[in-house]
Image (cartoon, rainbow, N blue to C red; front, side, top):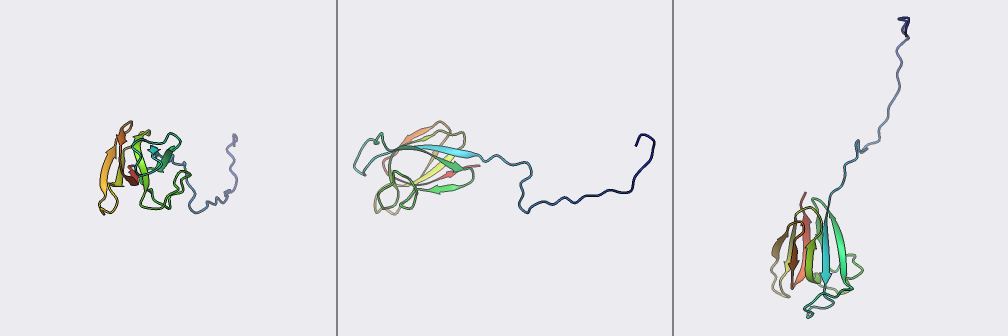
Length: 129
């Protein structure tokens, strides 16, 4: 204290939970705008089938019959996509099936702000960290 007197040692316990995040990190996302056709033969997207999907950085999002999209009603490899647009600020790499029964996967890249017309089923995208 101000008079130079000291007390005995004081102590206290501090407990931290396992996995506690000190200084929470902000999760970054890719944002992919998808304009889809309502069937494989349509040449233009259906305006009612437009959605934006967020993909966490460093992860892959698969688009197939198991994908929980309100617009995905058909079974099969993917969805009938006609246009993709990268509306986020991160680089996206995508893969698609260029045609039924070919067994091939085609890769493509979308820089931030870039759009791409596509005429095949979207298989998956990777959001780069």
